Image 1 (tube, rainbow, N blue to C red):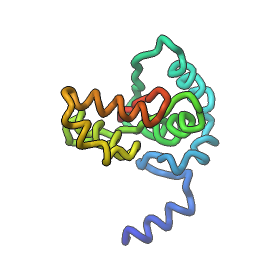
Image 2 (image 1 turned 90 degrees about the vertical axis):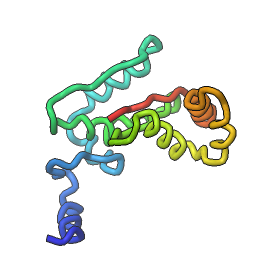
Image 3 (image 1 turned 120 degrees about the vertical axis):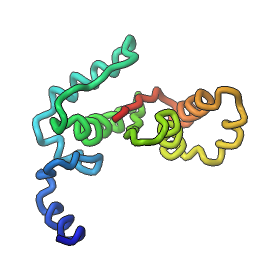
Length: 142
């Protein structure tokens, strides 16, 4: 089946994703899947001033990526106090992937030359992203 025919087939049934994760564009549909309590619990933990690090675990295919992309990230975007940054790891160096996502999300291309000249350029880049967002960053690693 050609990819465009297959894609059209799935557009009709957006809630049926098979093994594909829900994405940020599916947030409205995902919100109807009775995950409200889980999302609220997670958001409350993230908003706690003593929270620094957490992890989400579950069997492969249980919906962790969908929860992050279509559930948690849109809720963080609605919130005026935090800024969510979704980072999907690949075969790239992890810090390089984070660096690229921060540059992309906060349009830091123009500041890149001055940032990379600084000692500890990753920290400088993170500080610049924080300054642009003007609120705490929550990095969602997948």
